[in-house]
Length: 215
Image 1 (cartoon, rainbow, N blue to C red):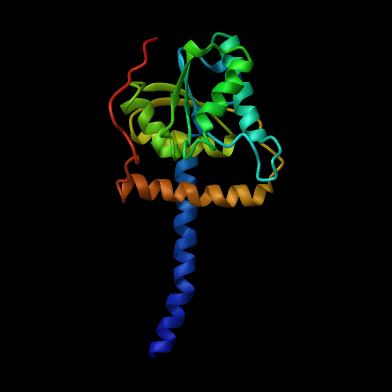
Image 2 (image 1 turned 90 degrees about the vertical axis):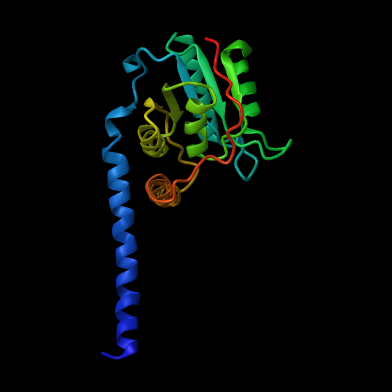
């Protein structure tokens, strides 16, 4: 076998191996967490703290982001129904012009959630950071995660790894962004989560002093 023939085999096999790894990682992430994904608020019991994962309140075209709005509506409903008494709003705070936790807080307050029921986590740069900080910084090992369905599996997978008793209350998915683009991006994100946790030992970018919640 010539060197060129061996190279051709490698070039053909490598994408297949990568595809297999992505499929296996996604299967593992989903199957190990799907029983903790809730769509009915009535099924949520015994959890006083909710972690709302951040996203921009605006789309690139300047219109309202339905992912953001649906998460906020779900959080406000949990509070009104007495299912949650405190929120950790975790997201990116890269500049004074882009602050996901502040925007979430403003939106929740407008829907009747008091300041006293809200804690801001401005170092939730990624889902992994938000999950880990909810336990290591804010002292919560039993939480409800509020996000969209396709994100929920990864968030729960990370929670399981860190021995956090979490369930996800999933909100309505958006049709404003092409589903294919969103799902493909999440397939890779789930694969990266497996690598981060079990191979790369990736840690949050920022931890700092503990700030246990007084609830």
